[in-house]
Image: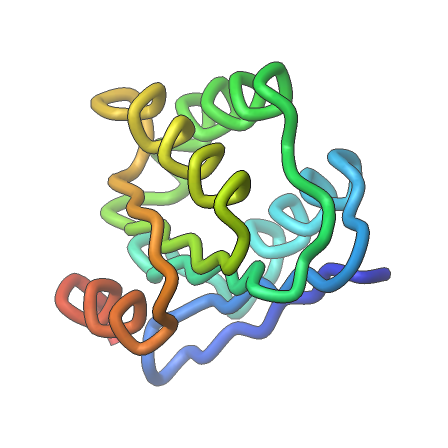
Length: 127
């Protein structure tokens, strides 16, 4: 599967790495796996490292992610979501997610620099 996750309990960060073509179903399955993991706890920062990902969510898929995030708000706790991308279209779609999810889901931001994304997550990390 081209999407994997790693949970750093000490740092309080979940890193999801997507490479190549990732399907919408694989995205959803990965987040279910993260939330179902005994190592996950509400409030952990979520880092989506999509710098080498080739597929980009459609507008309809972004809206589905917004709905899913709103439903999972309690399970996510005081988490933050940082999306790191390299492609312009992916940056725009992740910004669309942030705008549509504002107030209904966890705070999210789009980044082009992974270190900047990590600093933003660590500001709020429970780890």
